[in-house]
Length: 129
Image (cartoon, rainbow, N blue to C red; front, top):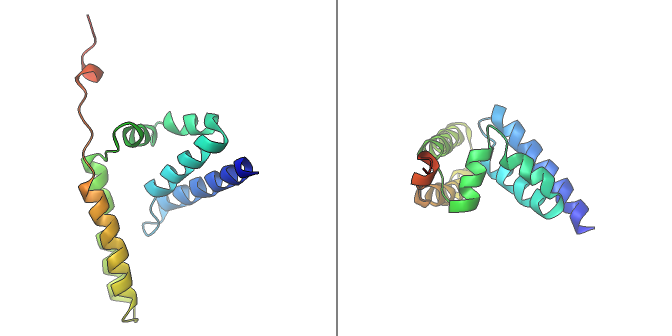
């Protein structure tokens, strides 16, 4: 039963991640990370397909192995958070919504900014003799 639930949640997360590619307000990476986590518990073959994906594979394996976020991905994520928050400030008529979202988005931004950058592993660049 749990395996089927995880599989459904994995597909839903992956779907939201794909939608996030086209909608700047919806983040892609957290949903793809969630999808691979759910797939690892329900269908490891699907998790491996994501780990070997040409677009997401490197980011996912870097996160899995080092808990690190590449600098370019950090810059993109923090930029999108800032743009999204700016749009919220500009379009929102609520007084409380910007405050609540500042706390949430600020926490996410702090988490992203404090993650290490990937280690440049020498053995990945130089083949052994």
